[in-house]
Amino acid sequence: MKFSVLDTTNPHYNLAVEEYLFNTSDEEVFLLWQNSKTVVIGKNQNAFAEINKPVLDEKGIFLARRITGGGAVYHDEGNVNYSFITPVAKTEGIDFSYYATPIVNALKSLGVAVSLSGRNDLVTDSGKKVSGNAQHRIQNRVLHHGTLLFSSDLEVLSSVLNVDEEKLKSKAVKSTRSRVENISSLIDKKMDVDEFIAFLSSFIISTYHPEIISVEENPEILKIYERNKSIGWLYPEKPMLSNYQKTIKKRFDFGTVELQLSLKNDLIEKVSISGDFFGEKDVSYLENLLSGTSLTNLKSTLENVFVGDCVSGMTNDDFVSLFNL
Image (cartoon, rainbow, N blue to C red; front, side):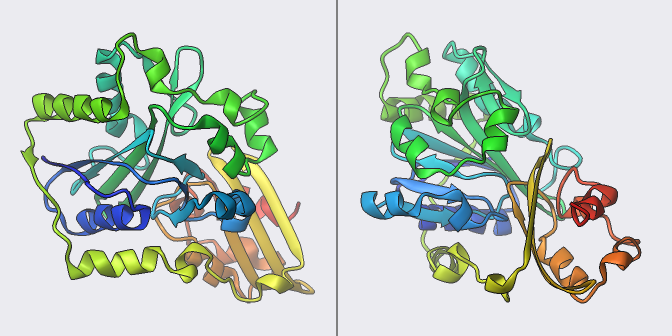
């Protein structure tokens, strides 16, 4: 295993380093990193639906988009991010428990008991979230990363995210603020965020005996960095977005799926698929496949397709049923 603590807090650059290592490393890699104030949205999310843009603009908060699915999260310098990259998958399909184990064990050694809850959250015994996780796979390679709320500004966190009310209902809470907690409030030992990073580093080194590396800037990282901060990446334009006639949105156990449809009689002219779901294949595959298909032929169009590859956990019947809502 290789190990590095990134020394920048630029979210677009840090995500570029992570993606570069995911694409190129032939060994396991563990990273620790921090971002300046940032909202990071999932690969499949509509930025305008997920963020309170006036607040971001007012407070000078970055917006970033990651290559993993899942929901929007808030980063600041009281939050610590970790990434676990493996060139060979350790488990079948999207699996959070295996890859989160080093963090669970590290927190346990601090006296903070956490467990995986729902799809991808680490929560305390009281049910408060201290970490959100996401995952991406290409062929057999895996990128697993997550947040660690150590001493984040939870009031800002709750003000910058537009959280779906159905998601809050599903977790039996009234607000984002009421379901999150800082790790610093749960440990007896007085510790600041730098000491927490030093503790995590020591834990990883003593447990896994990794090769400690520094990641040098290179043209490939800079290329990804330029994409990460581009308007086209952050706010991708969907063809005919302003002309979509129908929006369908439904929450499942595996996440929220939203369809925006442009229809001409029975014909799907264009479809946009977004949400906080995970998936191994890009949803653009489904969008392109369905363009020009009639609603009555949906099942036959999807006959040789497994929708769950793009929307993990979703069956073809689940997907087809959305078009009847």
